[in-house]
Image (cartoon, rainbow, N blue to C red; front, side, top):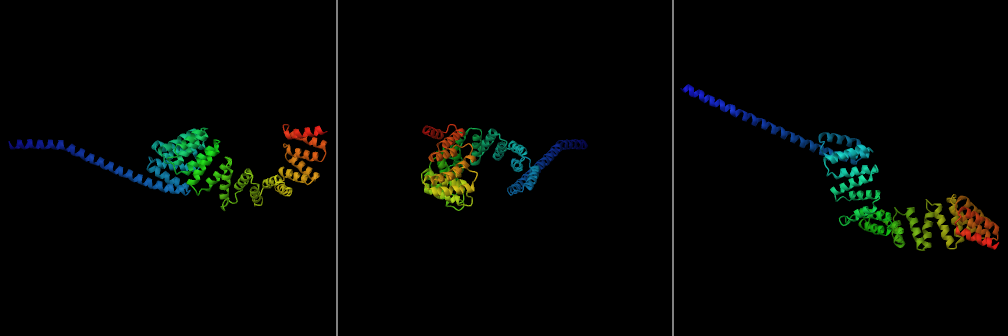
Length: 406
C-alpha cells in the first residue's frame, strides 16, 4: 500500500519534471539569444563609433590635401559601417578631386540611396552633372540640396546658376530675389543678382545690388570693383569715378591698368579731358605702358589743338606699337598741321598699308593733297578709299567736291 503510494508520487514528480524541464530549457535559450543580441548591438555601436572617428580623420586628411591617406581611411571605415551615407559622400568627394567623375557620381548616388536627406550628396552630384554639361539635371540636384538645407545660400545660388545655363535667366533672378528677406545679410546673393541683371541688360539694377552687397561686405574690394565697372556701363560716370578713385588709392589696386583705364575713359565721357590726360599719362609712363595709351593721349592732344603734344604722343605710340596704324594717322595730322606735306603723306601711306580695310588713311591723304591743290591726286585717294569702303559718306562727299571743282 505504501509502496503503491510511493510509486504514484514518483510518477507525479517525473511528470512535473518532464513538464517543467522544457520551460527551463526554453528560458535558457531565450536568455542566451538576448545576450547575443546585446553583444551584437554593442559591437555595432562600437563599429559606428570607430567609423565616425575615422570619418573625422579622413575629413582632416582630405582638407589638407592628403588624398591617398584619406581614401584609405574612408575605405576602412566603410568596411566597418557600410550604411554611413557621410562616408559615401566623402569617398565621392575624393574621387571628384581626382577627376574620377563617374566613380564620384555613383558614390553620391549610393549616399542618397542610404539617406535621401543628405544635402551634401545632392549638391556634389549636381556638381558632377554640371561638369558633364547636364545643366537641367544639375539644377534639380542643387534644388533638392537647397530644399533639404534651406539656410545654405550656396545651394540656392548653384540652383539659380543652372537656370541661367538652361536659358531661364528670369527664373534664376526670381529664385534669388524670392529669398532676399530670408538672407537679408548675405552679400553673395546680392552680388549674384547684380551679375544676372547685368546679363539681362539692366545695369541700373546691377548697380543697385552691387551697392547693397558692398554695404553688407565693406571689406570686399572685388565688389567695389564690380560696382565701378557697372556704374560705367549704366552711364553713372561721376559715381564710377568716385568708386574708382577710392580703389586706386589703395596700394594693391594702384597698379591695376584696367581700373585706371576705366577711370580715364570715365573722365573723357564727362568732358574732363585734363583729368583723363593725367590718367593716360600715368599709364603711358608706367612699367607696362602700351601703344594704345599714347594713342589716346595723341587723340586728346589733337582735340585740344596741341600739335606738339599730338606728334610726341604719336611717335611714342609708333615706337611701342609699330604695327598699329593709329599712331601714323596722328603723326600725319601733326605733320600736315606744320605744312610738312611729304612727311604727312608718308605717315598716311604707312597707316593705309597697316590697315588695308580702313578708308580713313586714304581719306586723310586725299584731304592733305586737296589742300595742297593736287586735286587729281586727291580724287585718286578718295576713289581708293571707296574701293575699301563703298558706303563711306565722307569719301563720297569729298570725291564729289573734287570732281565738281575740276
